[in-house]
Length: 139
Image (tube, rainbow, N blue to C red; front, side):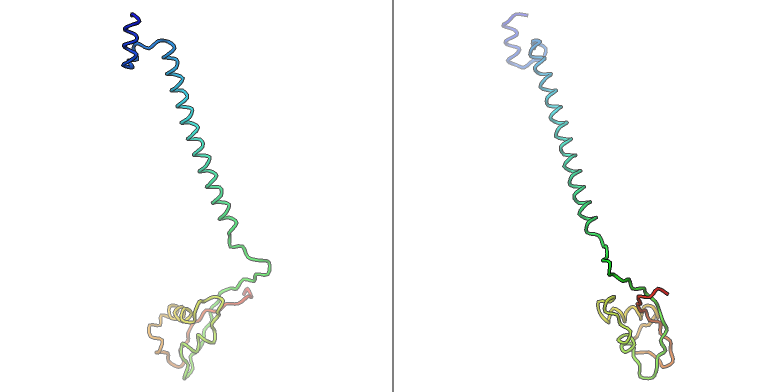
């Protein structure tokens, strides 16, 4: 092939007419592109791993560990007999533990669900009501 044809073919980027040095240059360029792609993927994986480790370590440090002076409370149930004039409100108020319930209404709703009470105003004298309570003693 003449130099003029080679020059014309190189103008149109026809790979059939590349010289050995142009082929080597193109192969090196492709090899460098693969290396750069591989480095970007590895860098992305390393960053993702570092972010995962930071999140994992942060969540493990924010655990629900209790102090040495923490004393657990155990939940128990007892039966209370309703007397004349008693209401569920009075029974709940006498046995309410503020450390375990956000409000006395929450405590009363638990008592109602335990005893299947639908109307809190319909307690009869002599009925037995099961109520939960908390104690530091393990029984």
